[in-house]
Structures are given as structure tokens and as C-alpha cells.
Length: 275
Image (cartoon, rainbow, N blue to C red; front, side, top):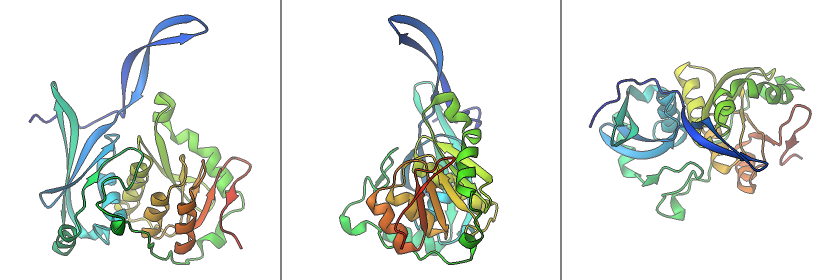
């Protein structure tokens, strides 16, 4: 199988489309978000294939490893190699090879599950209800929420569009951003799947050795249970989303002691499970 000549994927491709409006038809060029199969290979054994925008895959692999409980700490990952393959008659795809500590690898083999990577479902492929992990870690109280500026969420909502370059080009990607106590955005990642965008963000925080308890996650999507679950696993104290939460997301946030706000706008938001 051939390796692609370049690892620099733009995140979108140009396609010719026919645009119809008010009875008129025009041939134009349009930008479409890239969606590739990405295989995550631990110590030589493929564990999962996720559908992903083929950018920032090292950060994605680190974030996935942590938020799925494959490793407990970033230091449990000793080496990462990203390979871009395909082209011609072969579907373009990527492989991320990770070398993890033996304890993590042994645990992974004991609890392996078939994860069918999907853009919109975080639990597709688990073998039984019993494998569903609904017991989040308790988020530590580090005083971050007490220092949060009153207008931090509104500021984050205002700043997010400037960090969504691929979304501006394609109209079809999700974004996950990391904000400080003032609402200023430190990092932002885009992806066709909201779960994978969050994994990229968390992976970046780990790679940069940022304190994941000293900021909040802002998401362009709805708040599903798994987005809250992933955030709680690494101690994020607050998750804010543009769209609505699900009932399970609210329940998981309450169990974890994580503040959940949704319908975040420049002048309003809704907070859930308040006393």
C-alpha cells in the first residue's frame, strides 16, 4: 500500500457542484470537508477506526487515548507515528501508531471492544449495555469557576467564529475550543465529528502540558453525554455548547460536578441542574 507523498492535509477538498436558486442553475466550485478513516494502532494492534478530518492526528490520538481510558496519563504514551496512506484506486486513510506502557496495553487487551467509528455516535459498536461507561470521575474543585469572569461565556461565543476557518469554507465541521477564565480562546480544533474535535483539543492540552482544570471547553455542537464524559475524565470544570444538551449529558455533568451551559450566545446562555 502506498504512502501519500504529503502529510499536509488541508481539511477540505474542492468539488464542482451545480447550484440552483430561484429557477437558475450555475456550475461553481465548492469546498467540502475531508472525512477519512483513521486507524488507531496500539503497540501494533489496531483498536479502532474513527472517521476524522485528517489534520492534527497526533493530538487526536493522544486525546482519544485519554478520554477513552486507554491510558491514564499522557506520559503513558511513549511514541506516536502518523502515516497517511492511499491515493489512486485506494481510499485515502491514515494510521496512527502509538506505543503505550505495558500496563495500559494489557488492560486494553482485556477490555477490547469493537469501536465502529462514526461521525455522530460515540458508542456505536459496543457489545452490550454493561460496557457503557456512565460513571464519570469527580471533577476536582480548583477554584477555577470562582475566578470565571461574568462575561466569559459570552466572550467565547463571540470569538469562536474567528477560529472556524474550515467551517467558513465548508459549512460542515464542528469546533472545540479551550478558553481561559476571561473567555479568551487559547486553542481551537475543527473536525467532521464533534467527539473527535474534542479529542483533538484535549490531546493538544496534554501535549502542551496545560492544566486541564484551569479553563473550560466551548463546543459548536450540542452537548451529548460522551462530550461531557470525556471532559470529566481529564478534570475540565465546565463545558459550554452552542446547541442543546441531552438529558444524559445533564445527568453525567451533575454526577461529575461539572458545570454545563448550553445555548451559549453573545448575550445569553442556559445553565443546567442548578440549585
